[in-house]
Amino acid sequence: MLSPTPSPVHDVIVVGARAAGAATALLLARLGHDVLVVDRTELPSDTISTHQLARTGVVALQRWGLLDEVIASGAPAIRQVTFHTIGDPGHPPRSPVIRAIKDKSGVDCLVAPRRWVLDTLVARAAERAGATIRYGVTVNGVLRDSAGRVVGVRGHDERDQPVELRARFVVGADGLGSRIARSVGAPRIADRGAPGAALYAYYTGLPWPGIEFVTRTGSFAGVFPTHHGEAVIWICLPTATALAARKGRPPEAAFETLLARAAPELAERLRDGVRTSPVRGMLRAPNQIRRGVGPGWALVGDAAHHRDPVTGHGISDAYRDAELLAVALDAALTGAAEEQVALEQYEQARLRESAEIFDLTYALAQYPPVSTFIELNKRLGDAIDTEAAALAARPIPGAALTWA
Ligand SMILES: Cc1cc2nc3c(=O)[nH]c(=O)nc-3n(C[C@H](O)[C@H](O)[C@H](O)COP(=O)(O)OP(=O)(O)OC[C@H]3O[C@@H](n4cnc5c(N)ncnc54)[C@H](O)[C@@H]3O)c2cc1C
Image (cartoon, rainbow, N blue to C red):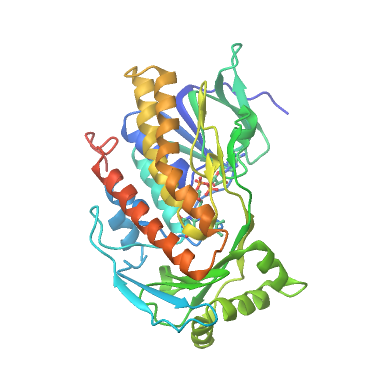
């Protein structure tokens, strides 16, 4: 192998170009910093996700001037949610409850854009703001100076040529299996285990008037309308239940069996539709938080904080924390705050702002009886409203500068 070509020292290298990485790069570039993003895969491409944004994520897109672009891409503006509840044995059946999406924190709709559309759109906005993105670069570890401070990353490009890239800060936005987290030795500061699973597939050929949630003891299922007249049909449930349904059968047959139990009326309706994808998902979804900062490095998104998909909050966590991190790195880079102080402020803010939803997510991923599950979901709705209002009330990073 050849020696890597020396590279300029960037202000920030972001590893990972999806929800957390593209958003962090977008905001830092708008704040005037020299940002290089690297990702081993190329966008547009998909990733495992049912891609519904909680209000916080929609507020973030609105603040960054990207919500109209997401809707113009063909992601339906969702204005209605239907709650179906299948009572426990001995309880009378409950009628579906239909609610309009309220106009709060500056947004009056929700969206569930396909990730290959959403992530690409935010990454392109980062490029328009001045960030450079290099796809096909796989990072293997960090570079350190003689004092142990992280000063860059090493890896290889798509032709297997070695790459060494230097920066004042390295951001690990490289997802749950974060190589940056492992390289810097970021300890897990919370680890509640991984009881839950989420499975999904895309369907077409039916009307999708809005989001639907179906609650039953032992499962949570639903519908998120997305691009191209399709909806993602999903089931969240204990991993043990998902594995028991599988037992040597094709994933699609297991999914249909699970859906028929979790949401019988929805399963019946889907007989008139067409499944357009294989079944995808995740078993044993971790609920964990890593230490997110250290000398010369920070983590954001799933690299820093992973929770069960049952609350559909991962993109919103990533966007919220991308704003907190961009503000902290801007303060450190401009000298407005000492680096250690700025990074610790990010760390404490993201832990504080994610705590309630992390706890509620973990409680929901235990699949308690239906009445408790509904109560927890109501608390989740209130927590998201508070979180979205807090985000909407902050100054928008880089908004004072002109951006396209
Ligand atoms: C089944 C399921 C359903 C979900 N549904 C929802 C939902 O409805 N709503 C929601 O908000 N969230 C949902 N989530 C969570 C959401 O998908 C994640 O929280 C979100 O993708 C995290 O974004 P991220 O940018 O932190 O990481 P990722 O999306 O994982 O992106 C990490 C990027 O880093 C790159 N990368 C990784 N390692 C390297 C390396 N060594 N070198 C270079 N590049 C690297 C990868 O190629 C990738 O592009 C779901 C998750 C699952 C598993």
